[in-house]
Length: 274
Image (tube, rainbow, N blue to C red):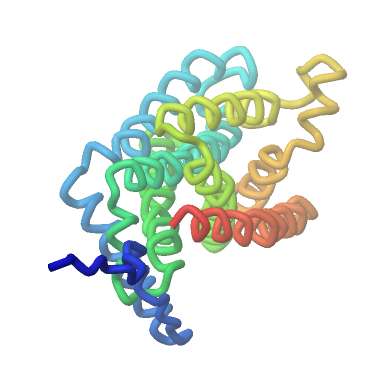
């Protein structure tokens, strides 16, 4: 007897499950669920809130006593300038955590598991960014609380609330930049390092801690167009004077432009990686 060889082609290819399209309502529901996941992560790992709880205390107390006499004559006179600056600096710097945690989740394969679920593909990314808004709120409360303990008194309660909301919106907008870095860079440490390399010059070449008039002319020119300076000036005018200035408009425009540019790019890069 002769053996008959099986000439049929071997089927070795594997087929990925089809991508399920979800509606807008389900996408919103999925995003809310992922936002809750981010909030639960903060609850169970409170050390992640170290930067928005401890840093405002250290910055306010340290800079008030170091620069207060030299810049404003005494600590109490310096607080109206310092407290809004610290609030903005802490909120913006805390937005880096968005990109770092996103990179860590991708490295651990968490987002790979999300891809296999019948949920909106954008939900894990959007939920993570929205959950971090709580971080910005904590940063604002801590900065204002420490400042008021030291003697800071905002002139307008409504203006202060509006200024805090504006700061949180700006930090949310900037977090899209760091979310993009979290997707593109290969390590969480790289995201942290590159982000700090960007934020440190932006923070210190602005009017966060010192008046622009005291800077050399070339640095003052940079500080005048620095978006951080516009945000700090917006918060100071709203909280200290109860006035809406042109800086508020420029800050809103800048935040909207950042979201319009970086959000689609970050989403596209995330979906390509997913």
